[in-house]
Image 1 (tube, rainbow, N blue to C red):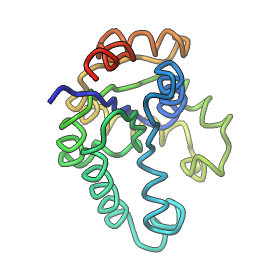
Image 2 (cartoon, one colour):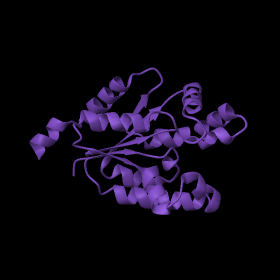
Image 3 (cartoon, rainbow, N blue to C red):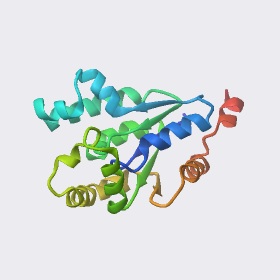
Image 4 (spheres, rainbow, N blue to C red):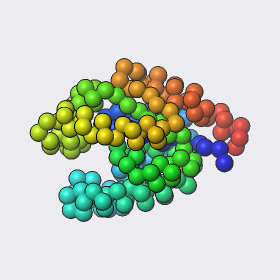
Length: 183
């Protein structure tokens, strides 16, 4: 079976949702955007901060594994993954089944600026005392996991959305015309 999904991985604020939406648009809505965190929220019936607070990180990661398994059988989807999806190898195994795994990364400084701009409601890391340090610490810990999981790595720091999408389309060879021919 030829892979026809794209799974976007990376730290928060590296552009996964933005790039995912643009890919769907470029593919003339022939694809659907699926966000793992949104599915987890739906399944749990509560927000991610509430899951962490009330049920703990282990329970959140269990939801994440179940969601990755569920979406691994979907076709023609762009998957925007939560930042910690790479912490469980089983998630990557599920995603790799039918998806090119694209790592979007950015410098800690750019991530910090984007997180600050987004605000506390959407970025729980801002509850920390030293946000910049927290970003650097978590990013450093996760970096090897991201790199091992990725089929394609793109630094989003100084690239336009259009350029990032163009690179993804070229490297994955996924485009609308391919599917019109292959049916």
